[in-house]
Length: 310
Ligand code: AMP
Ligand code: MG
Image (cartoon, rainbow, N blue to C red; front, side, top):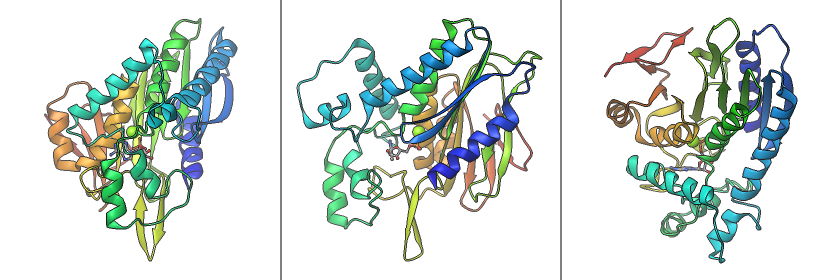
């Protein structure tokens, strides 16, 4: 299911995102448990792709929640580890975003995700006592934050090279870099949560992160009940907030990724309040009933939606 989703986003981005006159250097890789499609335009495009590919693999090696020798797993085991300045800064920023969202984004739910079987695809509904026990554990899982951070890091790498522009599709995350030659905005398709194609098209300018969290991206069903991977830290169950998809558009990739997950957990009303008290992102919400809402700065077309104003 997840792979299908990733390929879908990829196709949308391919169709919508690259009408420049020169062909990009392109590479598809599998990293962070997802298909990633990298397209880079400009003189140093080959070098850019090589550096991005290496950086993504490096981040995966460091922050994997499953690979036993990753820094993250060693931290979770309580092994003595020394973190670089950059690594500590990342964890501190994530903790800050967790606090800012009132804990709706909780980067320490590894045990909880594991007991729902989301790590090894061994899906099952845990008992209430297992959920309570898992909520008491405090082990890192950057699954809701890392791809956004990775996209942003890739954009930084590209800014140090002679690269004109880039479109990086990292699973459900899209990172744009630079401007198209005709000055036209990038066009990013948002998937319809029901799987029926595009819900709408977002226009964004320049370097931007566009991150979607959706209940259709990773889930399983038992007795006709759907259990998805975005968990409510308050009760340990898949968030039942009335939303099925949240897209965040933000210059900062880490913020975009943490907020897509957090605002999904909050639900429309709290998420709207959160947006009104911030000034650094825009959002598109889809409710489980199929209604679409977009904050006033989001440039969404191709669908009927209600605008959320300040
Ligand atoms: P995303 O697709 O960005 O919303 O991230 C979902 C992933 O983040 C899940 O697969 C888990 O690894 C992790 N996760 C689940 N629930 C939460 C939560 N409430 N806060 C932070 N991370 C979460
Ligand atoms: Mg996220």
